Image (cartoon, rainbow, N blue to C red; front, side, top):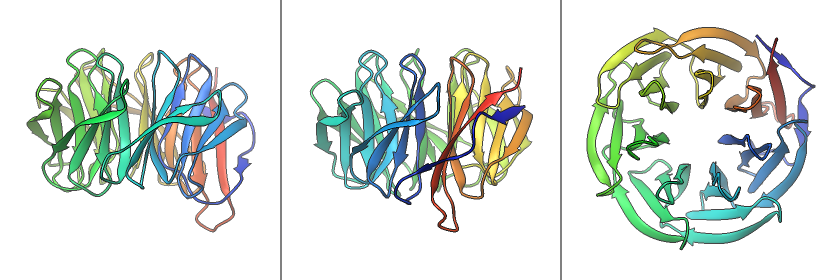
Length: 300
């Protein structure tokens, strides 16, 4: 089970959060603190806030495992590159659309940024920081996306169509779609490379599929916004329904629920530290009491 390592830590400026990620090697947690227009930086060991960088109305976050720099996507049509040590933006590009989730493929140096409530995915070259492609996707309202590190395909959830769009890395076009009819309003999506399976959630259901489109299983689950995967243990942590719920992925089958811990009615984003397996939750209290971050550790 998960246990809090400390009480919730208040964050200045009430505004709510979006995506969160952990650089386990550098012991840093990065959270999109949208309304404050800042990237929030936490120490992964202490859970304490150590810095903020103004990046615009930020939604998506990803990082370069080689340099440690952080990429953010914002509602003002911008993808930024942030130096988290110097605490400043070092590159930016206008992609022509509001950005929601982003993902980075270090093998080809591409940042994939999907359009908030839109129908496009923007591709940015992380070296030149130029927009190299705008991909039209089927349907409307893309949600989370994930990258296959072997094939470099991009799996993009499509809320409106109950499907996953698969982006080919060579042509940078949608090569096929995976229908997920039991999932309504597709939101969380993660890819387990060792098990070679995609796990998605929406409408109180969680399912697993192969990249080829074969359904492996489903289970009744909570209504989650964001999930994060610990690939070292094949454990998925999901935020929603007022808490954090963990699932054990199973090869060739549906996930199995491990536990749930109550957090706050406003929690909907979460990240896992793959080095320690700790879970970080961030939320804006719906009653306007403030914004908070909290670290949870798995019990021995």
